[in-house]
Length: 64
Image: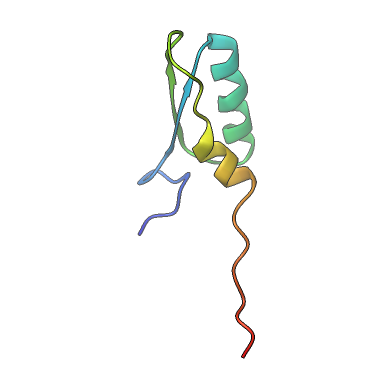
């Protein structure tokens, strides 16, 4: 399985404005993440892939 933010599995986000698109692209560029940004003014913003990259889940360590 490919890692999120790579060429084979880019982060996909939807934003409402071009300014917000540039903001998200800058964050991804600064972190060397690949991203596809769609500008959809009539839809709710969805930046969950970028949020996942910024705040990766912590691994669960089981205690035996």
